[in-house]
Length: 289
Length: 289
Image (cartoon, rainbow over all chains, first blue to last red; front, side, top):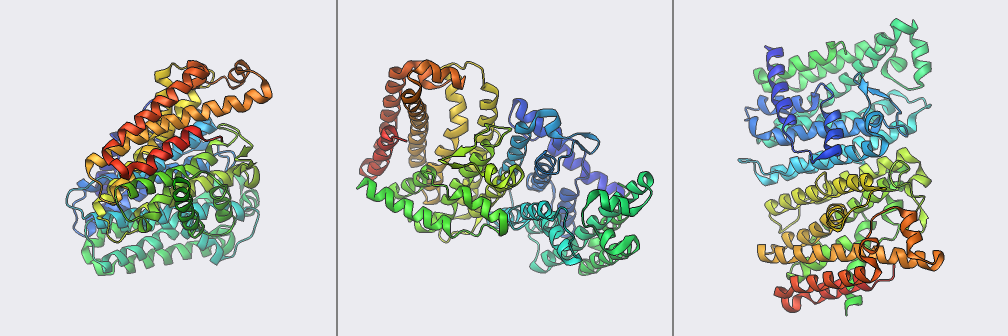
């Protein structure tokens, strides 16, 4: 049931992404290169699942829903640049700047971010313009200086610095949490969700956002463990505060479970309508990559 | 009269820019560094003047109006990066990346662009949400892959290539023209301008956009002439197609006059309400920097 539904959402998203008008020539090529690099599409899936949980129609909100993945993709392209994280590979493929050059990669990111706001502001039959404006405002806040970009700056500044758990959570809430939360909210707001429903989905997304990050950190270590043999080396090599370095592997696993319980609890008010979201939380906690 | 009014618009814009909430810490500092670097604020002035020409209130549209300059500023920061135009100076000050580093400069640009859309989507008392959504859509189009960013890519690709006049105009229409046009349209749309008024201001802005670029090219040569002595060297050094290299200095001056006449003609329907805009066109043609 869950995997069939996830498959259905993914197909809707992939089809919609494939038919976007991304300009022309080399710019279009570089935008598409990263957009089609095979991400998990967690943000749009979360938006569609939230809309569906509230009984909404999802076919007509695919433009704003897909905009979420354009914003995510732009952030990855800029992140990978030599002056940022300096990663040559992303999802097993060469990073955008390794294929198109740094200048084009910067512009491809800029174009994806800007085009996302075009998608967010297209007229949607049956959705009140006030709701759409609210969504744009919230997405801009989540992606901007007090959200994702702000978290990115803090992350750059935190390199070679030991963070405590509170500081680490603050970085993640900004860097990845804010966009996950706004993804759930976008789905809820666009299908006329009540403030109570929006609030429940917000708490759910906050919890799975941190769960996602803890799982990421754990997967990173498990991957490294096979080659490097022990945790301390990975920690040393990365010089970065993570959940396992702060809490230990077992502590991080306990924290992960607690976050998933928090997510379940947040959507209790939705009853059976929250089934897919519950499975999605579990999927995040158990994924192997 | 004109200069007093221009001064008044500038003051409104500067005051509003100075009180924006640009996040915190080093990100805020780097965003502010470029935002306060003393540009001409042509885009917000054009928006305010267009709104005013149609008899609109301008005090309550300062958020979206200032967003135009945030977008302009972000594009300059990214333009100056080593992997793009590689300029160490901008407006007589060190470029953003020379002060804050390339990574921070990329993020400051990203943050300014994103925050611009937050400003564009803030509720405005007395403005219909439909109109605001239309403005966001048009700004995103003007700034995105088929507008400013697209023009930037073409510009990068045109280096060391000879463009003809038509190709040169196409680059300018995308790279700078689209944002100037949408600035005038934003002012008109937000104060409930009729489609005829919006159309008149569009033609006006298209004409002054190209006039602005021709003047820029001429100023560049006149500046260089003093130091280098002749046009051919400047042309050679830049390896770039410009109006003077394509039309000759005299030909470019004639083209500039023609564009200004085009601008005058476009706003004839506005009668006396177009006085400031007429003077603004003249000001653009006669400025010395």
